[in-house]
Length: 488
Image: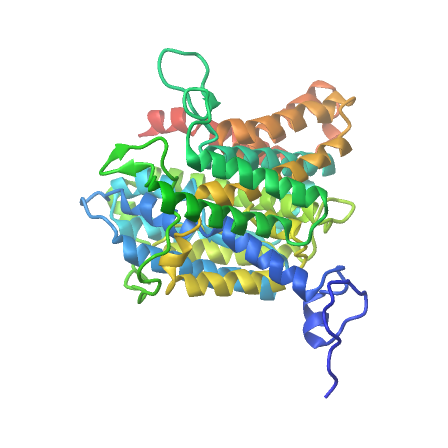
C-alpha cells in the first residue's frame, strides 16, 4: 500500500490519495493541517450556538404556555449542527458549517410559537425547508443566485464582513447601547469607557490576533482564541468576575454568555427527547392560513438569501469563486442547506443554516469540506462535552469575528464606485447588513435599489428577468407588517 507523503503545510496540486482527490485538497491549494486548523477555528467561533440557541428557544412559551427543556435543546442543537456540517463537507465539499440560525430562532420563539404549539411551529420550519429543497432541485434557487450581478455579490460579502465585525464588537461588550437621555444609539464600553476585565481580555486578544495575522503566523486566529480563553480563565480565577447577569440582575462588567472557568464535570449524557417532535398540519387550523403563510414566507425569504450571501462571502474570503462570483458545487451546497433547515425543525431546534463564522476557518486556510468534518465531529462531541464548550467566553471568540470582518472588507476595492448604477445598490447592501443586524435586509434593499436605478436610467434590458421577481418578493418582505395588519 502506498503511503501518502507527510503534510508539511505546503500545498501541492497533485492529489496525495483518494481522500485528497475526492475533497480536492491539493487542487484547491490546501493541506490537511490547514483544513484541521480551519475546522477548529470555525468550531470555536460558532460553538456559542450550543449555549445560545437553547437560551433563546427555552426562554419562550408556546400558545399553550409550554416551554422547551434547555438540556434537550442543547443536545439537539449540537447533534443537528454536527450532522449537517459533516453532510455539507461530504456532499458540498465546501468549508461552510451549519447550525441553528440566529434571528430565525428568535422569530420562531417569539412570533410563531406563541400562535400555536412548539410542535406546530417546528412543523412550519420543516415545511419551509422542504420548499427550499424543491426550489434547489428545480434549479430556481441556483438561477436566482446566478442572476445577481457579480459586483453586487462582492458587496454582499463586504456587508457580511462589517456585520461580523459589529457582532464581534457587541458580543464582546466593546460596543454597547448607550443609556440615558441621548441620541447616540451605541457607544464605547460602559459609559464611553473600557472599565471591565472582560473588555481588557477582548482588546488584548484582538491585538494579539492582529499581530499574528500581520506577521503571517499559521493558525493566527485559532491561537488568538485559545490565548484569549486562557487569559480569561486566569482573570476569572483571580478576580471572580462572574456572568453578565447574576440572579436576573445585570452585571455590566461580567462575562458575556460564558464564564471562563473549568467545569467540575466536563461530561454529560445528551438528552435527545425533542427529536421528531414536530407537526405539519395543526398550525393551519389553529393560527389560520393567512398567519401561517406569512410565517412560512418570512422564514423562506430569510433562509433563502442569508445562505446565498454567506456562501458568497465565505467563497470570496478563500478565493473560491469563479468569474461570475459563484462558488463550486453551488447546487449541492444549497441542497444541503435546505435539508439542514428541515432537519432543524424536525429536531425542535429551529431552522439550521450556513454560518458566516465559517469565514474564520477559511481565514485559517480551510478550502474544502475536510474542515467541515473537523467542525462537525467537534459539534457531535459537544453533546457530551457541553460544559467544556461553555469555557470559551464571547470576549475570546469575538476576536476572530473582528479580524475576519477586516479580511472580508478588503474586497470593497473591486467595486466600481464611480458607476452609481452599481455603487448605490452596493452601498445600501453593505451598510444595511450591520445597521439592521440582518443579511436579508441588506440583500433585499440592494437588489430593490438595483432594479429601481436601472429602470430610472432606461436600462430595463440589463436586469435579469428573475431579479424583477426577487425584487417584488423583497418588497412584500419589507411590507409584511402593513400587509399582516390589513389581512388579519
